[in-house]
Image (cartoon, rainbow, N blue to C red; front, top):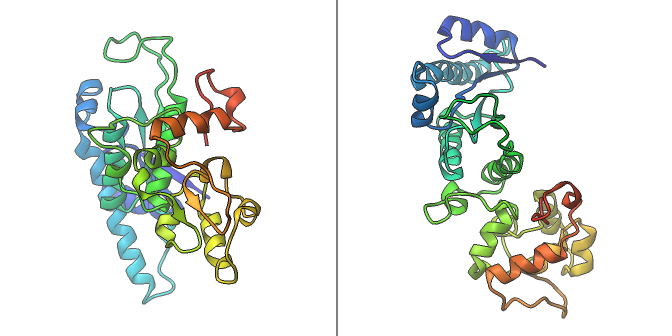
Length: 280
């Protein structure tokens, strides 16, 4: 497996040849916004990052069309293309970062966007000062948001908007969304569709698919859900099932958040700062 990273401004000819050897191609956009790039690297132009990405996209489209007709068509970047951006260097909000990711996913059909927390190495007053902590937890929350967008059907504006421009570091973004949208809950796991099941905190897509398969044969209760791997320490506040037992649901979002954090037994607790209790 070969993952080849190109520099901005690479020629179309080189990008085409590279795609014949590499499984995946990347052109890193470096900074999430044009304004951030202009601030930190005024000698660089966003267009120089975009041009080779357009070439790769078009070559992939052409390859996919040709291989339907000619099986011997040489493979071109069969694992697609990706990009990477530095976060925490130029002051963008999480909302701005994820809108940028969403744009590149939809415009260039990217396979992945990678997020890299800025490590202070310079005394330049445009950058975070030396000794500033690397935003590793923020980086993780961005990856979780990215996952929700790609596999759970979430749109950026649902998770991040002008009222909530940054992710809650205390809880994962799906739980954060649920706590702000309690009107959608509780969800009946024996009746609700796949899209809504996927929005229940504590349910991964594997659990969602297991529920959909299993409920064809019987009504599911708490024991069934636990055996399927559902994280009931969170999910129990957002769903109902075939059981007379239920959790109190007349709590506000902040009250539920506090309760979940208090009862969390996340395996990450010991490595996080004292203020943090929930990571997954």
